[in-house]
Image (cartoon, rainbow, N blue to C red):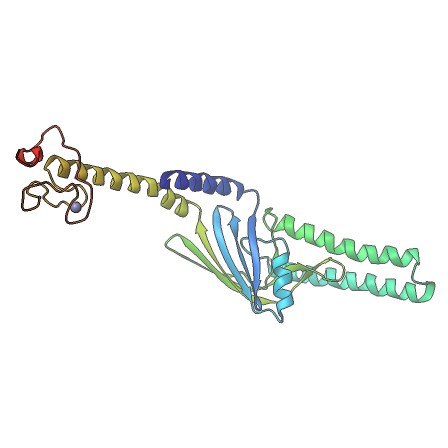
Length: 266
Ligand SMILES: [Zn+2]
């Protein structure tokens, strides 16, 4: 049972490990004003926590976006581009509003401008995905790279960043206000080694237990607790059929039976 479980876990980890180099897989959840991510990415499991958001709603929105196992940090130049895209988007939206005021709510030109504003954001998002090392996830924007520390094979990362989420009104990608985050990376080989060693250790322990029981049985001792059963019996010399110490049933006589094993005198 233990062996089957750990073999299944090992297979699952190997699968995720391979998968994590081309994709990212994870779950995200919000609690109070923070968001947590757990997932696998680039050969490691990542536990990420980001907060404090200005409100619980933002925490939920970040959790509801495509969850990434690890924030993708992008450079300062990227922030400038985001601002430029934001400005051009705002310009298109303002112009669409201006056209609607003059030509009516159903003006096709205004609709085209509004659609252009959405397309600008979509293109930006694709661009971020493309440039942030290829693996799709949740790109975040940071003024500077995170503070990275490695210890005992684990990676610890901290920093301040904006996370990509979606506008609740129209679903277009938007960036949250900058917030602090911390991430811990556990390389896939660590849990793999643990679950691979588990059945080996269990087998070794079982073999040792079986050997002890065999030796005790041969010597006429209780196989469970080692109590000497050879001299065990009541005042009339009748044999107990259970160990008086722990209650284990007396084992059937083995090939090398001892004289007391013959039972009470006739
Ligand atoms: Zn016993």
